[in-house]
Length: 312
Image 1 (cartoon, rainbow, N blue to C red):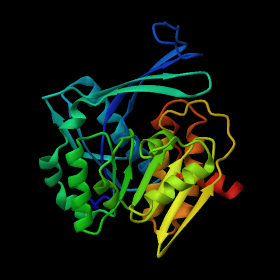
Image 2: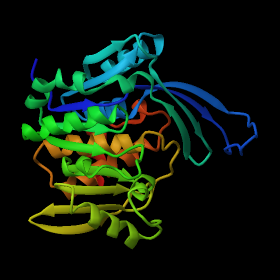
Image 3: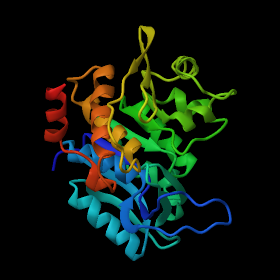
Image 4: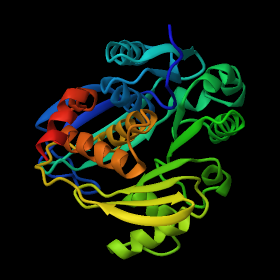
């Protein structure tokens, strides 16, 4: 079996999703219209997104010895991801996310990471040889902070690119995370966690990206849903641009950011796309995903993305 192009070290979480017209206020109960049990977690979602587009992807994660973990691994494998690196840990349960989605497709999520936090420095060091052989490692804030940094350090020593999705957002993020990152991807809320002032305008987000790119190695990408994506690139000099979003009717935005990350990773490792082209490609994939319900089931194939690219 060939070495994976992409190693995803991250979270596997069971999504318990309730659909409702309007989010309840504190202390209020609302009747739901639909309930779904989905396999998710930022790491798993990003792995599936890249795999469905054709990348050779391996997932490194910790799950509990329970039905949630078992079902997640089964579904991830069915999507084409190598799951040999998923460890069953009896010390904790598989992570769970309680998600509500309203009639506009917006979502509110509470995550219990569970076994994901058991992905520590020792476990990361056991996969050093696999990281060395890969083209890119994807990380998010879904495992232990020490595990994230150790993975980044190994990648740096071996000239392996790092895509770090700073989600969920962390205030006062240690600068070492950014110094060890090639591609830093965050959404509006996560970007604001890194800013001393509120970010309200396009210019605010541009200034935030320009500040971060002084630390990050290659690119800072701030996704903003239906608005433009802000991209700051360091390639000798520094430039910043906006990639306009497609105007689509969003049915379910849950997991769209993960779809973007997986699609960007797929595009960038082909060496056929510039950073800006890779952001454009990923934006098209994410726009397709929000037009369907679910997470993994909504992620497009390479043929679906190419069809959209050819029609533009």
